[in-house]
Image (cartoon, rainbow, N blue to C red; front, side, top):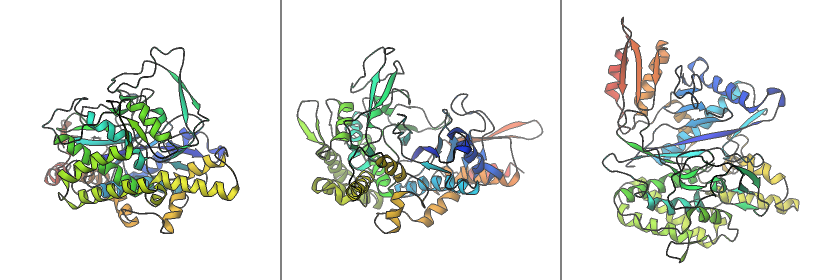
Length: 492
């Protein structure tokens, strides 16, 4: 692909054995197990951020990714290394989950705790982030208005990227609110009001786990005032020449196919925006449409455009698909796969979405729930459905419900267990993650502790005069192989 991308996933922790204490204690144990004896990577000894990432909150892994505990302290979070292939990205996304599972196994906690990429707490009203990062071309200026063509795509892509959810939530402003909830097209705001979260009894099942919790199209904060887009016009750190697009609206997919299609189609739409070839589609009320599409039990997914006419989410997606077919077909085999599968999925969604139960999470989950209700004679009010929803997202391949279907050949895959195992130990060979991994392995081998590792740089204190040596990786597309060799030689 013509850009690098990555996924950050926060995992919910379910403590099944009360004697182990609260989730905050368990995630700390698991994080420590991952970095014990530097088996999987190196801990950060420095403070990356006083609030969000204090010292020893996590570190970089030998596969080039990163595992850490978020600021709230109750979520294990894994960020994939920078990838240029959606199929690589799927393997590295699963690799992080397998590393967590190995740590749980080594701690002897199997059956006592479980981790879930479910993105939602049904009863507490919290959401667990799954954010996407995409590099943007350094020769172009990206304002919020320039990314307007992305909005309609993000609002409607949930028809194939949604993870599915039992129930819903209402966000109710409290007396401390300074303004009503907004649905402006572009509304850059910070946290300036508070709200309470309550279950919504009117919703039985919906496409998205996060749609109920998105308040703005663009928002500067990741909590309370969540937006579709979090405008981080900065780099991964101080040195990068490339900026990144940080997407807040999305959820962690269990299906490999859905993950690849979600990231792949988004990358192609960004290509169209950079080429000035993206379709001009503006929704009348993006946030309202987001919820309405997610909650539409008829699966017609009709929304309203700015000029007042109506259109289905499928047809919105077809506008982007046709542009991609016209301008991007034949560029490379991966682009052609994305375009071909994008069209296939839209066709099947129009015919009968249930045909996609082997590909899309929300369809597979809905089918499981329907089979359970039919066999047990219960309806959507049965509490057992929440358990099925949760166990669908269990990241342990021996326990997660989708993995049962996968073992029986009922799930379309885009990677293999062998590639996932390899991704646990080795970085992508076509991004700067390659050099980062090389240096991390050498630091582990030599027992070096005076390091600072970031996404785009590594520094060490060396020599008699404690000079700080810098290894700058400002281009995410570079492997920096020769530079890494030079830097490693400086360790001698």
